[in-house]
Image (tube, rainbow, N blue to C red; front, top):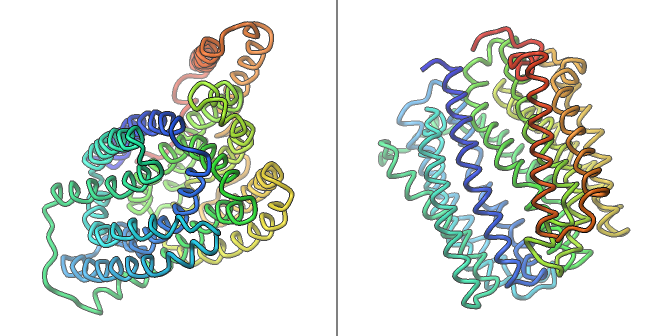
Length: 482
């Protein structure tokens, strides 16, 4: 299949699957919020930082290396598999033994049993890196989407049942463990490759030379993305972290379900055309515009309906999360715009450079957060908004150096998404203020959502009639065929 068709097919399947997962996540969160306290979500937020980091170590950066390198053999895959399994066992032992230290750091003794139970899943995760990377390398995203969607739906039903019978925070622990277990078992059933009882240090080193930089990069990225959880939990306590966790999960749904899934498809695509900067630039601009056309209206729309959304789906007890959600949506927009930049750097083999840049990013971000967190949760998020705005231009500068991306090209790609999304946002706010002030909150939320969708798609239709579909979706430098 032609690369362009594979990209379209892959993005189509991943986005469709993520809508199923997004809907499942939202419904699960809404039901759990009725039976769990904000402090319970805070505990999971604390634990997620540790477990997510452990999952990252289990991958060891090998996934990206296996996808990026086009000259690997069965011996390479087998060598990497056995190392990954060993890493999974080591991570399990470290997490199990360090549970007391983590509980002391957060002053939350409940974390000990939760973390010890969760640590067992890391052994299983260590076996799944190679087969999952092979499916992505072959761009078999349909299979991956079906597996992940089914695991989301099934575990969502299980965790809701567990919450209903009063198992509390343990329902969330079981959800994480069961989801990973189902996913990895199904992936093994979908790949024909099986590891040999073979290990070659030289073969392993060929992969590790690239993956070491990728692993370092992912660790820094993870610290950047979870530094707020650590500091908020440590200085503001589990209840505030619980509100923040819920708001962040809601905000992050479109980013995780759209940006990250598109980047999974783009990485093998960028890797395949890495020798042609013109093609890389063209694909980057098209992905930027396509992502913005989806993400911006969703997050700006959420800002407009945040209070009603939280009241309807989570109840009055979670109302404090609404203001946090509105601020986080601005952060989400600023993070979504350059989300494919790391994919570009890695596909060009510049993981080492990206590692250095990420260390600088993490250091600066930590300085901003450690200063602002003492002034409360709103000041913390406002500092994140300012910092992400500045960092956007830093990334644009380096993309210009590598693929000749101009600020004018980026602005041109974002023009239509920003214009349409702002028209929708203003329209919804006007309708909310002047026409829906006497409505029941359920009807008010429904009418706001419907009006937002109608305004956005009407604007999109008018733009289509004026400039055509190609001008809306294509970037300035998109004349190259993939």
